[in-house]
Length: 265
Image 1 (spheres, rainbow, N blue to C red):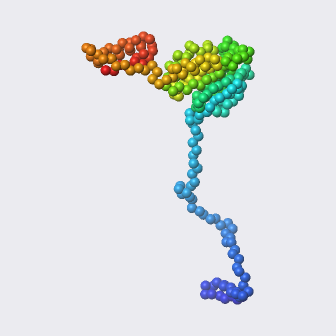
Image 2: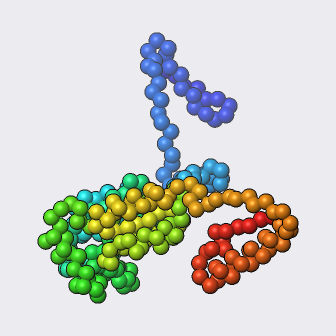
């Protein structure tokens, strides 16, 4: 091995090619205390986490099918579904049966929940961030829980909640027709946005109501078009006169007769 000095004041070592060993690469070591500055990433380089939209309550759909389930279990299901906090009174007991052939929204499920509580003699009382579930004032008069346990010998006598989806009929109008046909302690709710009825009654009466709904829930129910030829009178004059007559009749009856009957010339 030899050494020589160059004009640049650098010491250069030389080795014998025969005896020289391969040089090992030594990793470059940064001096202690040296700060390496990096340019901040641009907006395009900054990773952006994708925002996952949580499904709205109206967009969630569930199927509610319970067969002789304890009411506290049903309350827990609704609590987990809606995220609401409930405080249950010790007197809230019983079993419920709910039949839902189609999926419903969370908002509709809560309406079903309120209907079930009502028919079993219970009610909800909001108290800040919690909702209390207690026996309603007329629970003793209804005595539904006692009747279910002692008299519900036949399956036809048990109280259930039936969700009825309508295809053509107006749920509000159908509710008026069915309300006189249900028991005094039963409940019927209508929900127009989705064309739905929620009926809580004894099973035997539910079956009867379903037959009536099937007969009424048809396309074009109550609608009929008639063409009446006139020989002498003006069609426009007759139209004005008849529309006026039906409007006055609708005001006296406080109904929707004028909207159901349309006369055009």
